[in-house]
Length: 287
Image 1 (cartoon, helix red, strand yellow):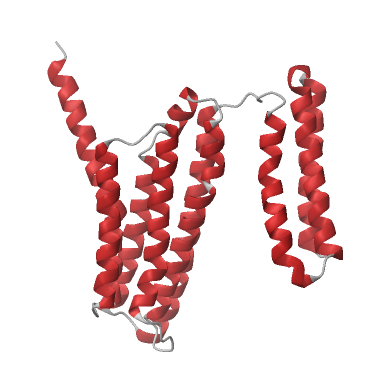
Image 2 (tube, rainbow, N blue to C red):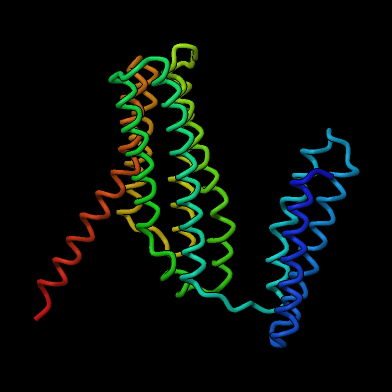
């Protein structure tokens, strides 16, 4: 058993002990806490058995079994009685995870650009890609924080909270993929890499489209989407499509990235304009 596996087991054992401690101190939610402890322990036993005794060729099968089991533990445990939780705290935890994922993308892109800079020196393409990558990351950050998830969760402390929690797996994965795509774009500028412009653009465009659609799907389940939200989503996806079309027609990689950055940025601009108009209207009607 390797050191990372041992560390992972120790962390999960600590989580089990915390749930047992909660069960001992909160009689009203004792059954739920015990279910959590039992579920986490059972899934951890599955992973240890799979990693230690299972053939390496069965790895994908273990993942297909273990991942749903992980997701099933909270659903099964909460059926014994919902645990008390602070909606704004939960929203903050997810928002911090978004920041971490975006930060990893910035770090990877910066490292790749530094390597390219050492090989080629300062070029217009390098500057545009660096600026475009930062603009895209900041626009994604801003577009995520446009939605007041804390207030939404406070109003909907029902099963829709599971949609918020589990649903974030897709947009978070998409953000990580956007970061990986930005690294591909940065590396494509280096002379030793022969990455076609269309392929590098698609590496970011597909992940960006998945993020926009999955975030909209979560919004739809939680509070519904009005016509403006749908229109801005279509506009954002249209801009992504334009960037791909530009890459297919031979436009340079830096300008395709700059176009992609406009997709989430356009959502931010529209939202901010509507917010300012709403505030102006409220101020005008106030006696």
